[in-house]
Amino acid sequence: MTRIRRGNIARRRRTKIRLFASSFRGAHSRLTRTITQQKIRALVSSHRDRDKQKINFRRLWITRINAVIREIGVSYSYSRLIHDLYKKQVLLNRKILAQIAISNKNYLYMISNEIIKEVERSSPENELREGRVKMNMIKN
Image (cartoon, rainbow, N blue to C red; front, side, top):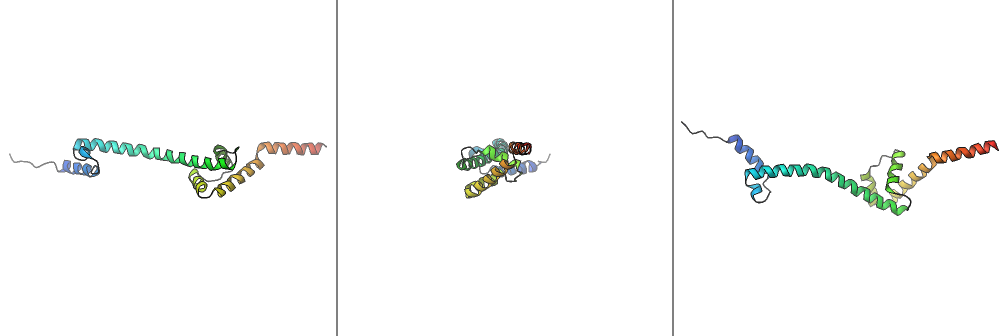
Protein backbone atom coordinates (compact mmCIF):
# COMPACT_ATOMS: atom_id res chain seq x y z
CA MET A 1 0.00 0.00 0.00
CA THR A 2 1.29 3.42 -0.91
CA ARG A 3 1.86 6.11 1.64
CA ILE A 4 -0.73 8.91 1.71
CA ARG A 5 0.48 12.39 2.42
CA ARG A 6 -2.27 14.14 4.31
CA GLY A 7 -2.98 17.09 6.56
CA ASN A 8 -3.12 19.87 3.96
CA ILE A 9 -6.38 21.35 5.24
CA ALA A 10 -5.51 20.81 8.90
CA ARG A 11 -2.07 22.35 8.40
CA ARG A 12 -3.58 25.40 6.73
CA ARG A 13 -6.04 25.78 9.59
CA ARG A 14 -3.26 25.52 12.18
CA THR A 15 -1.03 28.04 10.43
CA LYS A 16 -3.95 30.48 10.28
CA ILE A 17 -4.46 30.06 14.03
CA ARG A 18 -0.69 30.46 14.59
CA LEU A 19 -0.71 33.74 12.67
CA PHE A 20 -3.42 35.03 15.01
CA ALA A 21 -1.37 34.05 18.08
CA SER A 22 2.07 34.99 16.78
CA SER A 23 2.37 37.90 19.20
CA PHE A 24 1.49 35.81 22.26
CA ARG A 25 4.23 34.74 24.68
CA GLY A 26 5.63 31.27 25.33
CA ALA A 27 3.53 28.19 24.65
CA HIS A 28 0.55 30.38 23.85
CA SER A 29 2.14 31.05 20.46
CA ARG A 30 3.71 27.60 19.84
CA LEU A 31 1.40 24.77 20.93
CA THR A 32 -1.74 24.24 18.89
CA ARG A 33 -4.06 23.40 21.78
CA THR A 34 -3.03 26.34 23.91
CA ILE A 35 -3.16 28.61 20.86
CA THR A 36 -6.80 27.70 20.24
CA GLN A 37 -7.64 28.19 23.90
CA GLN A 38 -5.93 31.57 24.00
CA LYS A 39 -7.61 32.63 20.75
CA ILE A 40 -11.04 31.88 22.21
CA ARG A 41 -10.11 33.72 25.38
CA ALA A 42 -8.80 36.75 23.48
CA LEU A 43 -11.92 37.02 21.33
CA VAL A 44 -14.20 36.74 24.38
CA SER A 45 -12.22 39.44 26.17
CA SER A 46 -12.29 41.78 23.19
CA HIS A 47 -16.06 41.36 22.82
CA ARG A 48 -16.65 42.02 26.53
CA ASP A 49 -14.30 44.98 26.66
CA ARG A 50 -15.88 46.70 23.66
CA ASP A 51 -19.10 46.96 25.66
CA LYS A 52 -17.18 47.98 28.77
CA GLN A 53 -15.39 50.72 26.83
CA LYS A 54 -18.71 52.27 25.79
CA ILE A 55 -19.86 52.26 29.42
CA ASN A 56 -16.59 53.80 30.63
CA PHE A 57 -16.66 56.60 28.07
CA ARG A 58 -20.27 57.44 28.95
CA ARG A 59 -19.27 57.64 32.64
CA LEU A 60 -16.35 59.90 31.76
CA TRP A 61 -18.57 62.24 29.71
CA ILE A 62 -21.14 62.43 32.50
CA THR A 63 -18.43 63.22 35.06
CA ARG A 64 -16.97 66.00 32.90
CA ILE A 65 -20.35 67.59 32.21
CA ASN A 66 -21.37 67.37 35.87
CA ALA A 67 -18.11 68.97 37.04
CA VAL A 68 -18.53 71.96 34.74
CA ILE A 69 -22.27 72.32 35.41
CA ARG A 70 -21.76 72.40 39.18
CA GLU A 71 -19.33 75.29 38.73
CA ILE A 72 -22.19 77.30 37.24
CA GLY A 73 -24.43 77.13 40.28
CA VAL A 74 -24.92 75.01 43.36
CA SER A 75 -28.60 74.36 42.69
CA TYR A 76 -28.10 73.11 39.12
CA SER A 77 -26.99 69.53 38.46
CA TYR A 78 -26.22 67.21 35.58
CA SER A 79 -29.51 65.35 35.83
CA ARG A 80 -31.54 68.57 35.66
CA LEU A 81 -29.52 69.75 32.64
CA ILE A 82 -30.13 66.50 30.74
CA HIS A 83 -33.81 66.53 31.71
CA ASP A 84 -34.20 70.12 30.50
CA LEU A 85 -32.35 69.32 27.27
CA TYR A 86 -34.77 66.50 26.52
CA LYS A 87 -37.75 68.69 27.43
CA LYS A 88 -36.63 71.37 24.98
CA GLN A 89 -35.70 68.70 22.38
CA VAL A 90 -32.12 69.92 22.03
CA LEU A 91 -30.15 67.31 20.08
CA LEU A 92 -26.82 67.39 21.89
CA ASN A 93 -25.54 64.07 23.14
CA ARG A 94 -23.27 63.56 26.14
CA LYS A 95 -20.14 63.20 24.02
CA ILE A 96 -20.62 66.59 22.37
CA LEU A 97 -21.56 68.24 25.68
CA ALA A 98 -18.40 66.85 27.28
CA GLN A 99 -16.26 68.17 24.42
CA ILE A 100 -17.89 71.59 24.80
CA ALA A 101 -17.30 71.44 28.56
CA ILE A 102 -13.60 70.76 28.08
CA SER A 103 -12.87 73.08 25.16
CA ASN A 104 -14.95 76.09 26.13
CA LYS A 105 -16.90 76.26 29.37
CA ASN A 106 -18.57 79.53 28.39
CA TYR A 107 -20.52 77.83 25.61
CA LEU A 108 -21.85 75.26 28.09
CA TYR A 109 -22.78 78.11 30.45
CA MET A 110 -24.66 79.80 27.62
CA ILE A 111 -26.48 76.60 26.64
CA SER A 112 -27.48 75.81 30.22
CA ASN A 113 -28.59 79.40 30.93
CA GLU A 114 -30.75 79.50 27.79
CA ILE A 115 -32.36 76.20 28.69
CA ILE A 116 -32.96 77.30 32.29
CA LYS A 117 -34.66 80.48 31.06
CA GLU A 118 -36.82 78.62 28.53
CA VAL A 119 -37.84 75.97 31.06
CA GLU A 120 -38.74 78.58 33.65
CA ARG A 121 -40.82 80.47 31.08
CA SER A 122 -42.74 77.44 29.90
CA SER A 123 -43.11 75.51 33.16
CA PRO A 124 -46.70 74.61 34.12
CA GLU A 125 -46.30 76.23 37.56
CA ASN A 126 -45.57 79.60 35.95
CA GLU A 127 -48.50 79.20 33.58
CA LEU A 128 -50.79 78.45 36.52
CA ARG A 129 -49.48 81.47 38.39
CA GLU A 130 -49.96 83.71 35.38
CA GLY A 131 -53.46 82.29 34.90
CA ARG A 132 -54.34 83.05 38.52
CA VAL A 133 -52.99 86.55 38.18
CA LYS A 134 -55.09 87.09 35.05
CA MET A 135 -58.18 85.69 36.78
CA ASN A 136 -57.63 88.02 39.77
CA MET A 137 -57.23 90.97 37.42
CA ILE A 138 -60.49 90.10 35.62
CA LYS A 139 -62.41 89.75 38.90
CA ASN A 140 -61.16 93.10 40.20
